[in-house]
Structure formats: structure tokens, C-alpha cells
Image 1 (cartoon, rainbow, N blue to C red):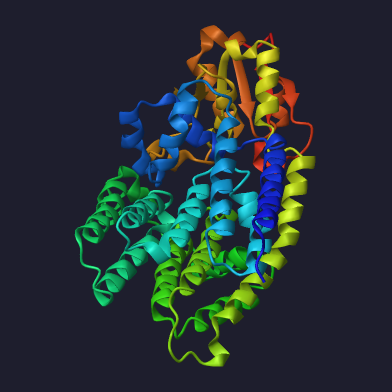
Image 2: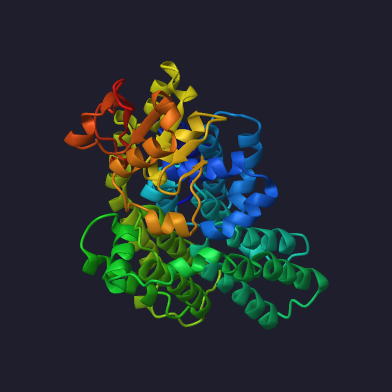
Length: 473
């Protein structure tokens, strides 16, 4: 059974319309703000100097920089993200050999429909370049397509560090297949050089970051982190032992297809090492890369057909299991989508609107916990926030020693004290923006002007806006 072009077009249209509707009702949060602010407020030189500290390759920032510099609405990066995901979905639906059931469910699986399509981050690039690689794979040694394939691998390298090992595995398979098939010509060697240079430069570049010394600490419980990541990747929520069993079965079913199995092992090992031992802030957005590694490995496994594959290890069984995973994810996908439409994801836009409507944005805005207060900055172009923990002005937060040592270390009262001492002649111009209400003692000196109406989906992005009372000196 195959889906007609009309049926595929209808499926893609529904996907795009639903994603765009979701974005229309989505309020970006601090992670989305950080990338936008770096692209908007930094020069190209500053951006390349800073990105190693962010731990991300440059491609996403370079894509949104023209929009941010041109003054386009902040939400425009979400629509760019959606267009990139629409491109990925087009390639997977029209230009791949994925089974029909996978094509029917994939657009509405949790990561492809919500996490990577509505929330504007660099994860959309992983999905797009992975889809492009899958579509080009049968023709990767052809004269022109070899260069396009190489550029797709470079794009994958430059999407996210968590997919780095998988991209390295693709280079290894390319060399292996090139040798076995004797595809020795200048085009394949040029393609190989492009992949190596365009991807492996990230090792010394990202490794040069001064912030690395602050990430030398190991996670408290790597095994627990790894189990959690696998569970989130496959089931979103559920029993970790079931998720681990599913992953083991999916790996076993590739036993007679050595090359895609090797690719899977590369991708899983690289991503799970970082997720297990280095990431101290868990998130579904990170864990979803495990899902993409599985999808990519199985999609490419279709092009490696062993001569004597046992019936019990048929690739179709793994594909059926992937279908079951995506069917299970539909519940989480629908729930997250509905929640984002009916509830505020973040109150950063609402708080920023209050500041502007009441001309408070002309004062000195003092932020506590730059990590979350920076989410207001995209709505206040030209305005810098005074981050009291480091006693400096800024929009984006900087991963330096001050930020890493003081992150979450001080309550709002610390910012009040610092601002009072540093701006004694401008107390009436001080506007405090906090993520938590002040204590009863501090409330004696502060007037509450605004508080978010309820708890948003990102629970740490509710805001409280204060000013000093008139009698404070």
C-alpha cells in the first residue's frame, strides 16, 4: 500500500496548518529568547566568540540573525522553525521510502509536531538535515548528489552537539561504502573533505570555550539520567524498564544490518554520554534527539539489505515497534499542543507589555535570576536589564564565572539591596522584575505593581513587578 501524492499533500497541509495555529497561540520562553537576543544584540564577531560558551554550533543563530537585526517580530523565529520542520516533513513524506504507517503517524508524533515544530530552537535543523540525508542516501555517490549529501551532513553537524556522534557515524559509513563499492572519484573525495572539514572543526572550536572548566562536574546519577532520557525519547512518560526493553529490541533487530547498527550505536553513545554525565538540566528537547537517532538509523537501514536475515530479525518488526512508539506519543503530543493553545507558556510577553503600557520601560529595570528575566528582553528592544547578581547591564545572559557561580544563589532581596546601594540617587526610577514574590519584610518597602495571573506552563516564568515605596530613601 502506498499513499498517493494527493493524500500526502493533504497530510502535509494539515500538519503545517496545525503547527502554525499552535505558534499563533505560543508565548516564547527564555531558551527561545537567548538565541534571539544573541543574534539581535551581538556582532558577527561577538557571536562566534560567544557561541562556544553556549555549547551550540552557529547555524541556527546565523539563520535568525538577519531577522533579528532587521527588527522583525520576535515570533518570526518560530515561524521560521515551523517552515524548516515543514521542509523536513515534506522530505520524509515525499522523498523517503518510509512505510505508510510511519508516514501517517510521524507528522503528529510528539517531537515532530510539538517540541521541535512550535518551540523555536536549533532542534528543527536536526530533523531537517536528517530528513535530507535520508532522501539523498540512495544517490549519495552520484556526481552532483554527493556534494548535496555532504552539505546535508555538514548541516547536521552544525545543528546540535548531541547529534555530533551520529554525524561522525555517517562519515564512517560513507568511507566504508565508498571503499566497498569502489566509488573512487574526485566528487566523492570532495564530498568526504567537505564533511570532515565542515563538521570536525567543531571539536577545537567548541572545545576552546573558557566555560568548559565550569562544566567539569559530573552529574549526580548518570544511570538515572540515561534511563530518564531513553524513557522521554520513546514514551515521553512511563516505565523506564519498558523503554529500555524497547530500545534493546530495536537495537537487536538491526543485528544483521551491521552498518546501520553501528550508526545507531554511535548516535546513542554520543548523545547518552552527554545527557547522562554532563547535562544537569534535563529537558524533553534534549531527549528527543534519541528518538531522531532511532528514526534515522531505521530509515537508512532500508538501504542495507543482508543476504540471510533471519525471519525473527526482520526490519519490519522494528518499523512496527516505531509505529507503536509514535502512536503512544500521540497522547502526549495532543496534550502538549492543547495545553499550549489554552494556557500561557510564559508570562514574559504579558509582563513586558505591562512595563511598556505604564512607561516603566523608561526606568532602570532590575532583574533577579537573569536566566528567566531575560525572557522579557526581546519585547523591549533597545532596553538593557540590570542583572544584580553580576552587577552589569545586558539582555542575554553570559555563561561566565559570575553567572555560573551566582545562578540561583540569591533571593530577590539580594537584588533589592544591590540596586539600592548602586542607584541611591535614582530610587524612584528602579523597577524590579522577579520570578518570585518578595518576603513580607521586603514588601514593607516595595509596592507590587504587577503579578502574573496564574502559573504558566513554564512555571518559573511567572513575574512580579515592584517599585520602591515613596518613603524609601
